[in-house]
Length: 133
Image 1 (cartoon, rainbow, N blue to C red):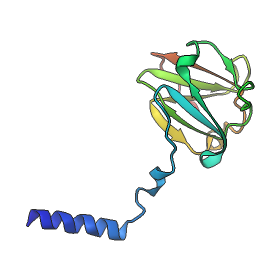
Image 2 (image 1 turned 180 degrees about the vertical axis):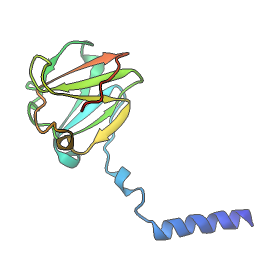
Image 3 (image 1 turned 45 degrees about the vertical axis):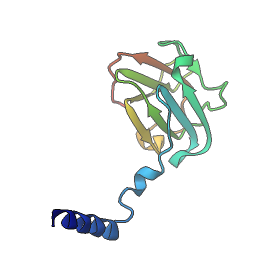
Image 4 (image 1 turned 60 degrees about the horizontal axis):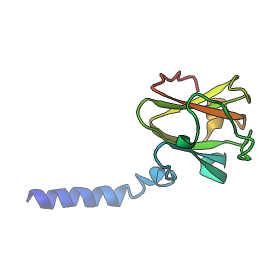
């Protein structure tokens, strides 16, 4: 009887809410210790995977060589606990900062007042993020 009720409940949920998880289906995969940046909102346009283990912690790196300078409008990240990645407005790591930690995604950095302005990035381990993005 309990199994029948569970099946009926699941059937009702699927019938009346078929797209309830659809919003999660469009978030692209991102490998651990990486961020994936996109040219346009909603994870579209040109994209680049930045695997952080290939970069020195604490150093500031230009996005110009990746052809993504001032062209990032959405981002996905998958970071170990305590790691923080920062996109910076200026080449030297100054100006406005967009910070990411943990696992997440943002289909539009424009909503955080960070519209196509990332010029460089850096990351730190064991760093406490300022959530001013």
